[in-house]
Structures are given as structure tokens and as C-alpha cells.
Image 1 (spheres, rainbow, N blue to C red):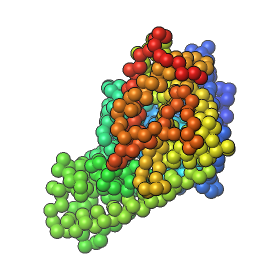
Image 2: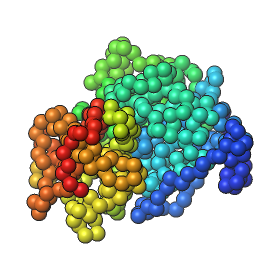
Image 3: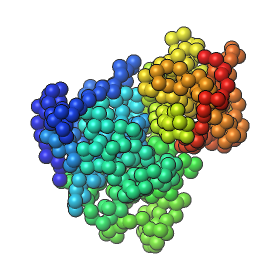
Image 4: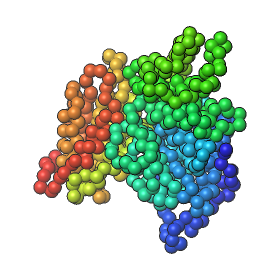
Length: 525
């Protein structure tokens, strides 16, 4: 069943003046509004606005309208917000949408649940691959069906404790603004930070895509008949949502390539494929046994190399069916991955600031330093080299790149920024990575020069001790970098290390940082 639609436009007009009195637990309590968006320097619009026509779009629009209506009527306690991480990539978006749909379409005890994109509306254009995924899933253009962080009528800090709770997907520690919320569940594929242990389910498992973990849980519920089936759909997981999840899985697993995926990615992909619009096996295979087993609970006797349950494929027909499935899934994975990768690579119009904020994840960590008990660290992942980014600055100079970086991190209040690049070498054609570390200091309530220098040396040591084959990054004119700035090229053999490895390492080093005013060496400003 869909959530009942309301007159959202009327209620939205009330936000500017009425929501303070409606939401405050105390009539005298002040509700602080926030504007989190920033002007975007680009507009990667994919065309004229299109209204979504699919099941998923209709549900998302109605949920959004009902959410705004209930918030204005002081019924936030009825809602669960499902949120991905701040980077807002396709995986986070798809996983959040899927789990919110799952919660709201259970036959027993359905919940009011809505997906939240922790991305400001003006930053949505920075990910053209998300536009493509939503368009292919028959959703409205420009994310108009979905809720973004800057559309919340009040700050997360004020809203969070009023909700029924939140669910985290694609990360396992809530942003500071959400820490007053009841954390109900976690589904993630990153390093477990050993927090929020009471969440249920609390699933942290290696996977190329978090959407694979969400999909496997949903397929299990589907096999037990636990989902409501919407009119016009064959299964409780609608076709539009199946397509969205498949695109997220294929993008993050490089089309289920051998080096980029885990067993859960392949299991989820096969399960979704079997209930997708793309599944049309030849008639000679028969359908009677298949319908019964299409969305069965995954067996423990699973062959991750072939993506099949060995106990199920016993007859000649089933063996032939599996060969067909394997071939067709590979075609679909290759096609979807190619489309999504091409869209993701459309970044020519982005300037350095947009490249930084396009895939930016922020973490607040507690330290052992009395004077600075908390630090804010930001991690950017950028698909081009530092030098190529320098060429996008107005003056095409390294100092200007650092000036843009400092302006951006000052704006969002980051003490540390780590930029991780990934690109193909123009010489070898192989994937390479760079790391650029910057520790800010000296303004507002930020670190002093002494403290910033000590923290910088601590983080440098952690990185250099962990990774072999690092080569210091240098300017093309061989001039030295200013203090508390250092870069490395990763020269190790094999696949370059990604953010999933680097980020926990730096966060751990920052959390263990212990400094007092008698320590450290000043290198200058």
C-alpha cells in the first residue's frame, strides 16, 4: 500500500513561519533553521524536467509529501529516516531508497519510512550517474521525488530526537547532527568502528556494494512472502527498484569483475536478475520449478565463482538454464556498468571545489588530547590526478589549488582534509593513486600552529608506516609545499589502496593523537 497523499504545497508554505510552534516540545523552545546549500559553479542538467511514471517514483513522491505533512503536525515520531553517507553516490542512494521501501511495504508492521540524501540539492548535479540511474528507474528528473538534507524543515540536531529512529546504510556512524536519534539498524560494507552495537539488524560485511547487502535481506523477505505486492507488479520488490539496485551493484563491482566483487554481490545480482524485467529464459527450460525458487533464501551451498546454488541445479534443464543465466547476467552487468561509468566520468565541467565536494565524507572523532577532544576530518575521492586538478584552477598553479582546498575546508570546518585521487597513468595505462594530506590551523577555534604540526606529523607517520612503495608528491617546478601539506604517489604493485582502507587508518591515528603544549615543532605558517 502507498502512503496517503497530502497537500504538500500548502504545508511547505507554512514552514517559514509555523513550524517553530508546531514542533517545539516547549512552546518557548527555539527551532533553528539551516540552509546547507551552496551555489554550484556548474549545471549538468540532463534535459527538461520529467515526471516519474514508475511505482518507485509514485511511492517516493507520496512518502515525501506525507513526511512534510506529518512534520508540520508534530508527528515526526511516526517516521524512520533511512540515510546513506554524505558522499551521496549511487550505492548510498539506492541502498537508502531500497531499505525505506522495504520497511514501508512489509505485510506485518509496515513503517513510515523515507530515504534521505545527505547531499544538498545544489550538489546533485555533481553526480550525473545518479541522474541516469533514477531516469532508468522511471523516477522524476533532478531527484525531485527524493528528500535532500537541505530540504529538512529544521536542523538534524533538532529533528533527530523527535523521530521514531534512523537507519544507516553505507556507513556505520551517524553524522554529529543525528546523534540524538534512536539508531535502529545499520547495513554497511565499510570498516566496523565498533559503535552503536545495539542496532538490529547490524550488518557489517565485506561487499563491493552496500546495495548487495540490502538486496540480499530484501530477497530473503521476498522468499518468505513478507512484502506487499503493488498492483501491476509481480513481486514485492518492484521492477524499478530492481533496476536501481542492479545499477548500483554493477557500478561498484565493475560489472561483477573478478577483482572487484564478493560472493554477496553475485548472490544479490543473480537474485535481482531473476525477478527483473530482463529475465526471460527460453521456453524449453520450463517455468514451474523456477517460479517457486526464483527468490528463495540463499543456500549455504553457494558457489561464489558461478553464482548458483549447487543444490538446486540438478536436472539438465536447470544446468542449461544456469548457463543462460550466467551469460545474460554478464551481458546485463557489462551494459549497465558501461552506461553508469560513462555517466560518472562526465566531470569535465567541474572545478576544483566541485571535485572536492562531489565525493566528500566527513568524520568527527574523539581524541586523547585534552585541549582538542574532537577533530573533524574530511576525505575526498577524485577521479583525476592532482596535476589535472591544478590545470582546472584559473591560474593553473599549485598554490591556487591549495587556496581553493583551504577555502572549502574552512567553509565546512574541517581540521584535516585527505584527498585521494585515482586515475590511469598516461605512460603505463595502469590505475594509480595519490594521497594529499592537509592539516588546517590558526583561525577561529581551530588548531594552533604547534598542535596542527604535531597532528600533521602523527598522520604522516601513520600513512608512511602502513603503505610500502610511497613516493613523495612534488610540484612540477620542484618548489617545496608549505608546512602541514604533503602528498604521496602510491607505487605499490597490484590494485591501488582505496578510501575504505585509508580512511580508517587516518581516523584511528587521529583518535589516538595525544598532544600537549610542550610538544611539537613549529615549522612556520
